[in-house]
Picture (cartoon, rainbow, N blue to C red):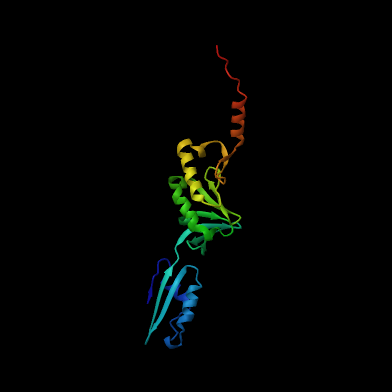
Length: 209
């Protein structure tokens, strides 16, 4: 008997376990079956028991797809604990949180927490890029890059949400928002934004009287 299956079929579990109908229970090592099951990425935990005279009991817990991870141009579906499950081929996974970079999959829970803090603004997020294994850059769907600090990135996300609610900052002609410093926010303008600022700066003032 097999319990705990969600995405795997009974055939899949037996194949991963290396168990066939021709095998006899006395000569089957339960520990070997368990080790083979645990070598399958989608299987998080497994218990195997032999019940004589002729019954094998397998209980598994499957890992669930929690995010997408891109490295070296390849995109994998990964579990919350960072284990790559399959290559991305199914469009049904495209709505999962998307992280990029070496080690980014191991910090998926942290990134998911940041997206929850962002609330509705998370719908405008394209991906989280782990920079040097230390901090996140948030890539927005409109091309704006938001640079988060290494320490307390959640507070920076809260500040971004406030700026968007109060000033619609992400809708302006900017390329990036740097939130890494505690006491200031730095912006990099697009070429259009620079041109508009220069035009405003050189616009002659009307004299009074």
